[in-house]
Length: 230
Image (tube, rainbow, N blue to C red):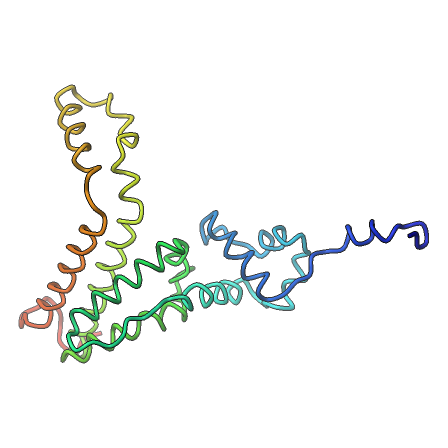
């Protein structure tokens, strides 16, 4: 069929992809999964959708608004642990829930904070565990100290283990030839043992140490903090 010299088939083929908030969030998540958040632009998302950049502004007025929507999408999939009588077990279950989310969506770490600001979606995910720590009797500067230590220790440890298995493969030490012969032999033997390490056991051990660290903060009277300070 022809209309003014242009076939209907050609017109259909040339139509831009229909936009929606959900489609834009999916495209933004894909773009973030392939790069760093500092390189994220609305133009990259528009390119994925074969759309003009200006068309995205009808849904998201700013880059931050789009990133916030993607963060809400990802952290909305977090499955919080059920309340438990023992706060230590609840902390461990929260940590395992975080591992499952980060395994499914490695980009979650980038979406917890960007451009020097902490995302609201991550704060909603993180706040229940902070309130749980507070209920163990911590207030003021001591609570702030515990919260800071726990957040850095847990996120740092979890993210370090996301790529640990890959780095424990023998292929990861292909530059070993630059070392002394005795060092090559030592590291080769060590790497064979490293390859046998079970990730779950490492995580369980680490989570136990994080819980013990919280216990130490709760019971150590002379922590290097100024009580009541900022």
